[in-house]
Image 1 (cartoon, rainbow, N blue to C red):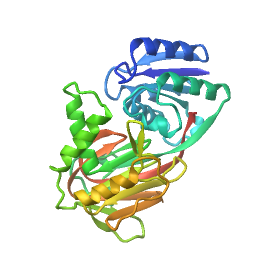
Image 2: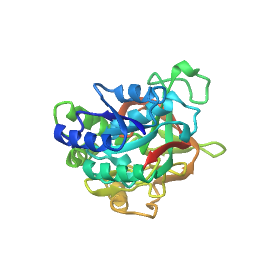
Image 3: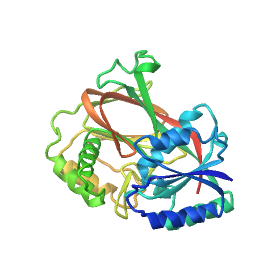
Image 4: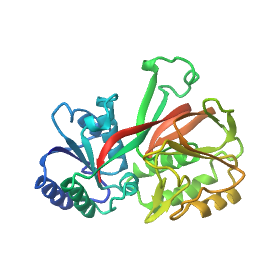
Length: 330
């Protein structure tokens, strides 16, 4: 099998020696070509050429950001192709959280994950998964999402496990700022930042409104978590499960909060930390499951994140489920 391996040399949990071992192991099983990413968006550019260059699979050694870029390259090059017509994806986690890999059942350790991928390759064990897609306007404040803004005025991006508007995206923005100063993206950094930022975020004016086809709008939402699978993320070894019914085989799920204070947050956190199978409960929650499409509209620009990547502030984002989008060797 001709395979393109994309390596992020700055991946958090790998070093040069580990990468060499993994490359040799993969090279013994497939016809391997290796490319290192050199900048943001580089994995997207490389993955977009994989099919045209005759690769049957693309393997990725990196974190969730590199995984997301690769997926967008694979789908962006062939947006109308069925999953079996695209190169299959092999995932070797090398980041700090590795949510996408762990949600697929892969070990969090890159060496162990490589062994699992090689087992799947030997048995030709593939899983077809759905993805999410977010669409927004190029500018912070664009035309109403229902208006015809034209393709040149809208941006879109696929996501593998989550997206969000509001508080969670504000935390990711703050963490990215800290990482730019050399801080490592450890779970403690996210937790401490989330706690500190809770006391400075706007907890008085709910700006978000949820729109769904043929449904009344739901207003007064402070933050919205959008999930393509469960868990939403991890705090070290512990999964965080605000949308436990979400899967790669269903549509998108959402959890929104209509109240943002300490009692509400404490009650929610108690219900979503750890292995959970039941939906969290509370009168201030907005929840949807297995939805094909919905839109979040804000009265002011809101922080937006996708697969843990901060993407600026926007006043509306359309979310769509893309079923059977990709084959993964797991």
